Length: 446
Image (cartoon, rainbow, N blue to C red; front, side, top):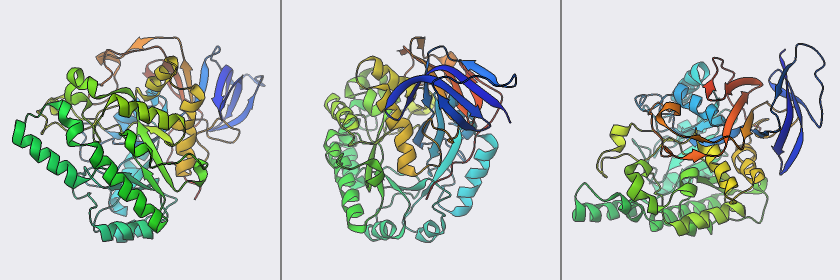
C-alpha cells in the first residue's frame, strides 16, 4: 500500500486554517496532525513549503458532452481540465445525445467514465414529461440525483406538464435539481426581439430576453411545489438578486429541504462585459446586472446560497461566434473556477474558509457524498495544493478544454493549483496532468 506524507501545509478545512501535515495511506487520509514523521523509506514525502492544502472541489453541475456531442468535449478531456483546476469530483448532466433518461443510458455513461475519467464522477438522471417509470427504477444510492429542466432544455427534456411535475416531486426521495427559467416568458421576449432586430439580436439584450421575471417566476413555482409535496429541491445557477430572497439561512444545510447554487460566471461577469466578451459569455440563465451580481455575493456570504459550481458547458468557437439566435449558450469553466474564487479572496470578497465551505464541504453535505469534501481521517485523499503567490495568465497554450478557449483568456490569476491528489494519488503537478488515473465512481450515504 503506497504511503504519502504531505509536509508543512496550511490546511483549510471545517472553517479553520491550521498548520500541519497530512499522512495518506492508500486511497485515504490516515492522519492529520501538527507534525508527522515518515516512519519508513517507502513513504513519499511532498513538502508543500507553507502552501495551502484544500479538499478537492466537488462540482455539482457540469456538461461534459459525452456521448453524442464529442466535437465539443469528452469526459476524458474535461475531467483533465477539472483536475488541473482543483475539481476532484464532478456531477454531470443528462442532456447528452442520447439523453440520460433511461437506466440503460445512465449505465452506459458510467461505463465511459470508468474507462476515461481523470476525476471522480457521478451523473444526474434526467426527467421528462413521460419517463416517471424510469425515474422510479433509479437507485438513489447509485446516482447524484434527478435533473429537471423547467426551461431552456435540449431534446425533449423540458418538463412543462404541471401534473407530471407534481407527480415527480411527490414520487422520489432523490435531490431534484432544477434549471429555472419560465419558457413562455423567454419565448415571448425572444419573439419581440426577433421582430425588432432579426436574427442578429445585440448580445446585450440576452438578459432582457432571459429576464429576471422569467427566472423568478420559474424558481418561485418550483419552490412552491417543493413545499407542497415535501420534495428535496436544489435550484441551480441563481442569476438574479430577486431570487435570493426565496432562500433561507435560518437552518443548517443538512436540515434544509430547499437549497440553491450560484455559478462562477454569475459571480464574475455582469452585463457590462457583453460589449467586450460578446457571445462567449452567453449563458442560460443570462449574466445579468452588476447589482444582481452584488446581491448574489451577499446571499452567498450569508448562506442563503449554499454551493458554488461551474455549469461547465463547452461549445466550439465557431458555434459561439454565430449570430445571437444561432450561438449556443454555455462556456468552459472547470479549469479556472477555483483560481477565480481565490482571486476574489485576494480582492477581499470572500475568505478561503468560505470558498472551501461552498465548493467542497457543502456539495458533499447536500448530495450526501460518501467520505469526500473534507480533510479528515478516514476520508478519501482528494486534495489540492494552492500557491497563493504564483501568478499566471490564461492563454491558448495552457487551456486544457477540448474546445480550446476560455472566457478568462488574458486574465492573470495571482494563484495557481500546484498539485492535485485523487484517492491518494498525485494526478496533476504544475500545469502537467500525469499519466495516471485514480478516479472512482462517487458513492452516497443514503
